[in-house]
Image 1 (cartoon, helix red, strand yellow):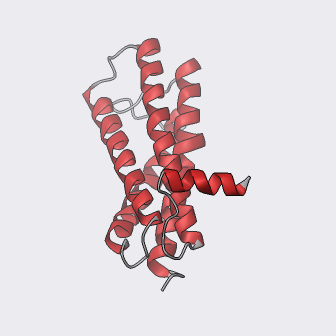
Image 2: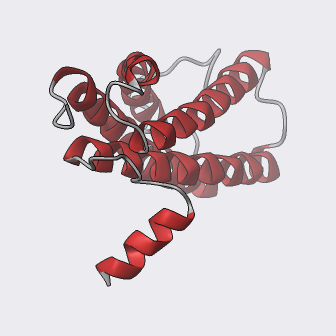
Length: 164
């Protein structure tokens, strides 16, 4: 039920803003998806290493790990923003907006590279089989909605807050 769900969110300290607006809820859901994306990405890396080995190249490893760390960090900022007034979280929310705006473009490029529409061999080799399936789950099913919700929630909190 909804009551149990809200109790669970209280335990993990989400949606605790003094005035809980739609924007706070969106950014809170983004936080949950961000943590799920972080875990799913680790699983994808393990599957990729098991199937394809570790020889991705320095550029691919660097981009991958930087994205993973940034995704985790911004999930934490989303969690924080879901618990504060829009005024209190303004600086963090601005960073969420900047990160998610840039990441939307990167996600689109990533999706195109996943399906072989765009090829940048120095960064990424088009995956197949289990690696492709793991990437579809982590990058498209979880990380893309995370990024979209972080963007929408941050825009709402910054430009049309309903808690002031």
